[in-house]
Amino acid sequence: MRKQDQPVHELPSFARYLNKVFDFRTLAASLADSRCDPQISPSTVFLAAFHGFAFRLPSFQQLEAELSQPALQQWIGADRAFRDDVLRYSLSGFQMEGLERMLVHINRTLKRNKALDAGRVQGRIVAALDGIEVLSSYSRCCDSCLERRVTVRKAGVKVEQLQYYHRAVGCQIVGSPIKPFVALEWLQPGEGEDTAALRLLAKLPELYGSPFFDVLLLDALYAQAPVLQLAKRLGWDLVISLKQNHRDLYQSAIHLFASRPADASGTERLDGKHYQFQLWDSEGLPFSIDHPQPVRVVRSEEKLTQNHYRGGELQAETTEHEWLWITTLDQQAFPPEVVRHLGHDRWQQENNGWNDLTQNWAFKHGYLHACQHRPKAESKEGQREPVANRGLAAVTLISLLAFTLCSAFIHCHSKIFRRYPMSGIEVARQLRCSVSKLPPNIRAPDAPAAPNNLA
Ligand SMILES: [Zn+2]
Picture 1 (cartoon, protein in one colour):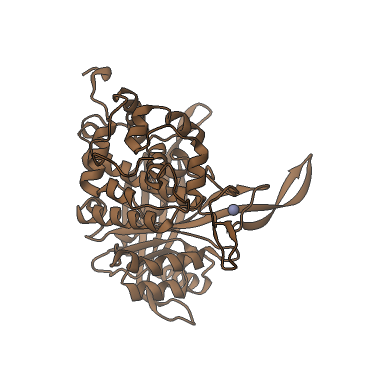
Picture 2 (cartoon, protein in one colour; picture 1 turned 90 degrees about the vertical axis):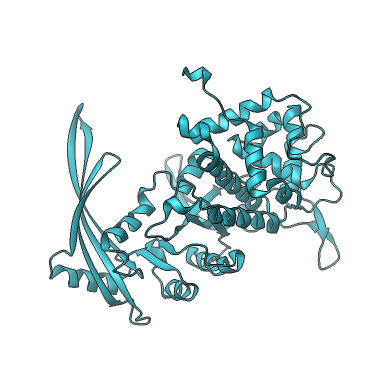
């Protein structure tokens, strides 16, 4: 079949899938913001921003231009075009609870429909937790900005400057083609990433009514007693990379393993790279003097061979690497090869959520940061003041919802994608193009006959 004859993805099919499987319109209709009696409803603002991300538009200005299409207006429940300042004003005072409920409902539905099963390891669902910086600025700041001093060069002279930034930790399911974010937690001024991570993990069972996943992959930063205690209490197994910053355990493991031959060895080919590895595996090492909970340590000594061009010629180059992980996984059910695999998952996931979001979803755009024009509400002192700025948090969560649902549409539903594999960006382009082919007066087929959310 010629490429131009291939079927393409269309918005009505995307919308039908979202409504049938996730009851998307009903969820959207329950959203709220801080405006009084607005002409454009919170649900419409949400749907506009959601479609902006689903179409991978780079900015709200671009979305505003897109909203001039009557078909798109009808689709999101607006009876006219509206400016991007409506989006900003609504989203800066958006109620986060509704968006969070939506995220939880979608993730639970995906799990119930077995959409996460492809990524199970020995029958377990695996998640990873990581931090990401969402924006940084030397000039614009808000009440919840984090601050640091950085050295910059100005006219060749090094000067120290105050930089504002926002950082969050996110917990994401890994291994399956759909990698939904389970939750996101923002770092508050003055606190470390580990504090925010513990807060995120502690709230998960309450949000989901269950531990939701079984194994959690963590960076060396989280090799801390409180993390181990919390995981034990909530029923998660852990795989944490171990570095020299955890000196006692690192050295006792190295010492123990140095005196004996490897417990297992193997080779692996992945993405044009060839790995040859030897593994050591030992149970019962005390985590630390203060917290002597016995943990299992797995060490991998690896030779990685890959081809590089040198002087125009392809040459194989081999480098040596060492990895250590601590884990609470059972040795019988999870042999060291599987622990190595899980440990590497954090790094080798080509489509790792953060990378994909940063590169393809305008995730670091810094939407609505330091937005001054916000709805007002009565303060404790009885004065009308702008509500706390929730713009960045709201837009970030909407982008994560779009990220998950677009991926679910592609991998769980689309027959076109199965027959003609294509990138997520191409699917987004097709969805966006399909809007201009809709009749101008089309009402979304899933929308109520007389929508009460019209202005
Ligand atoms: Zn800020």
